[in-house]
Length: 107
Length: 223
Image (cartoon, rainbow over all chains, first blue to last red; front, side, top):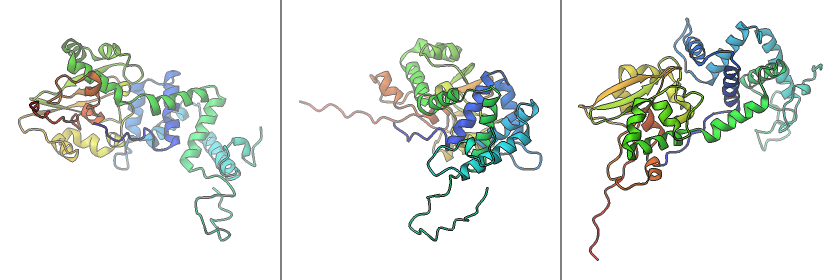
């Protein structure tokens, strides 16, 4: 019986988050048991209903772990995120969005 | 995000998807790119390795692997016995295993027991045999209701299990990830392993579905 094959990832960023987490797990940053524990906490906010364990939750969990470990502080992630948004706005449609395209970029 | 030109497309009413003055990047896409670039700079990741991983899980790993395991178990009683006793090395006999499948357990459906797999904590799933989990598997309704109302959940998937069949729910974790061995469909005597594997769906190996059915072959016509 052939059932329609659903796409593994709904968007490219989901695939990137998945690959980042797998790479960092294999680099020894955390075990899968630790990951599941942190993800499980992430999707159970104290002030709201339980969330899906989707790739948005994976991203939030990863950001929390990287901040705790001092690998990527929230402010440096925010600064870099803004740089990418400016770079995108300055990149002609269809061209690769590179950090260097940010008008405020300094190498 | 700056919207200086504020979607003023008075110069061109013919299309709405063109962004002549720049590219769109959603906030979540920008966050992911930020993390990736920071981690690359610090030497934690290799972007080429990320691409390889994405290709692997988008194009190569998937429920077709689990279907091969099920089909083998249907035709080979020794394989089936080993699979149920110690799944991980038995699955590895077919060259299947690795990340996310370090300790797998296979539970067999019988006329007395139907098995259903969930991860109540998050989204633990046996990647080598089933690929990455579907969206519903990770969502709160399935995670919560699979345990308290498995029969109701199965009904929503269009699966009716006889009242006399017990439903056992297995909670996958990062350490132990379950897969269901469905019952072999009727009228499949003489089927090749390949033909049998084609009947095995992803949901049949989670327990939210059943394998494909095969109509009885018509009686042979006298020559």
